[in-house]
Amino acid sequence: MKDINPGIFKKYDIRGKAEGENAVITKKVARLVGRAFGTYAQRVDEKKVVVVGRDNRTSSYDLSAAAIEGVSASGCRVIDIDLVSTPVLYWNAIHHNAAGLMITGSHLAPDQNGFKLSIGGRSLYGEQLGIIRIIIERDQFAVGDGAVEVDQSGAYSKYVGDLAGRIKMERPLKVVIDAGNGTGGLFAPTLFKRWGHEVVECLFCQPDGTFPNHHPDPQDAANLRALSEKVRELGADVGIAFDGDADRMGVVDEQGQPIVADRVLALLARDMLKRKPGAAVVADVLSSQVLFDEVAKAGGQPVMWISGHSLIKAKMAEIGAPLGGEMSGHIFLGEDYFGFDDGYFAAGRLLQLLAGSSEPLSKLNASIPTLFSTPEYRPHCPDEAKETVIAGVKAALAGKGEIVDVDGIRIKFANGWGLLRASNTEPVLSLRFEGSTEADATAYRDMFFEALKAFPQVEFK
Image (tube, rainbow, N blue to C red):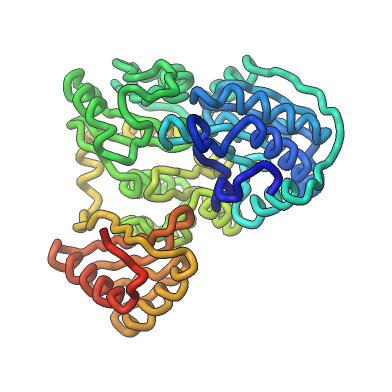
């Protein structure tokens, strides 16, 4: 391949090591990706404008400059919105009727980086990223000299102004923010104040691409400790954390207790279904059965779908669902919005729900049933063996329960469920189990583990 490692092309994005020895995301690679994406945007989607943004990682500035050179060399006009969060990039791509290229490592380690590609708010994935790779491999670039326009102030003010006007709050709340030294500190405090809330503290709001305080991943409870302590200390109503590029958010209640993403989605679904009775809610196969049951109980249509933010968004667009989400913390909002994953707007909807309730967040969360969940198990399995293993386990467990096979196999039992699916990014399988009791969940886990013993290529550490 022409000066590029094929391993950087993942299912949902392009990413890899960007600093130090053996870096695979380099300025040369950024230039090639930019030029190939500009070519793709023109030939496939007839877009001649590409909005480019970047996060605050130490490698992002240079990678952004190189990507802009590549996009311009394809003949596309570039609108450079500079340092922003990923949802701001999507928003601007939609409003410019353009393609979008975001340089971001999201929640990954500081030495990692990559590219999220979109047409408007629709993310490229799978075969679409494969076309980008083929354009580079075959040197099939479009040729031109597109202008480069810098538009920083408009990207900030228009986005914040739009979101501020979309949500009305019944009362002010006391909120603590944890931006994790990512881009969240640039937008969240301003937005929350515009919505009428008191930001009593903003932890780690200064962007720092080395992430000196904690990893920018709000779905790991260890990264929420400082937020939990500060919420309790200051008597706040809620704590909101963001990942590095703020397309995901995490939540702690007024007692400092984290609330996992599918339970946040259940609360948002209940609220949304009051306004849109009968609407569909899409969630990934890793989500709790409680979520799907709560959607049905509230009069909605629960739709279980394949894990991955691009795939959930595509399914929502296909069936016209106004809400979706996944266990990783991506929440997709189509009610009075554009259907993409925006951590700020998702936080705004949760704050709106809480501001309209007489009960604290802990009580709202307690109103959702709780099942016992195991951790996620990730045994090693060669990529070429994954399909055979999953098919074999499906055959071994046939008749044990109701099987859903949209993404691996998820079997619904009398008192819970078990899931076996293939990781899209690593040579591992993913297993998760849930039951009415710990004994139920453990029994379902043991059933799957027993079936996996027939496959020596699967290795548990």
